[in-house]
Length: 243
Image (cartoon, rainbow, N blue to C red; front, side, top):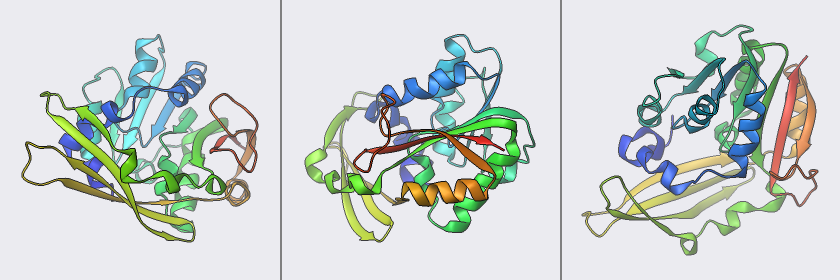
């Protein structure tokens, strides 16, 4: 079940104001530019595929997301295909050269079964030799330790209303980190709260699962500047190929 901040149309409309285009988007855009048929798994507001189309991509671009709020924003871009649901249910078979999963969306896969099902679905959707690119946060870096109210930011919604947003960690249980994201405005009677749980897999565990699903890891980076992955890297950025 998608988090409230993704399901709700209003909260989804704030996403791109909270998360400006950055080096992670540039990394994936470069990959997409060299692939003819691309599926974005957990596409969110669709801005990555929309930017790819706007910058000249002429092949097939399809975004998949189970969150209606996010897809309501994505569907503003009529020159890209959109599928509401999960990749596992879409039935794609060898149709894509590249699959991407951005924005740390891989971390919403909380169980071994969730990870296996997703990897199997990506494997089926790709042609032989196709690639799957995604990232997760490196657990040894401990990103959640910085998720406090001190990290609050203020943005404006489409109507010009000032909204203050901040994260707070509720629980750390092994690989699972549960936190809230609070949205508040002086013009609202009360704040709105979205609760999320993310899984922080170690790189070696991730690689074991990729191999079991029929992938080979071709590239591994620790940051968006393509520096090599180390134990202290903030990210585990992976480009794997379907064997």
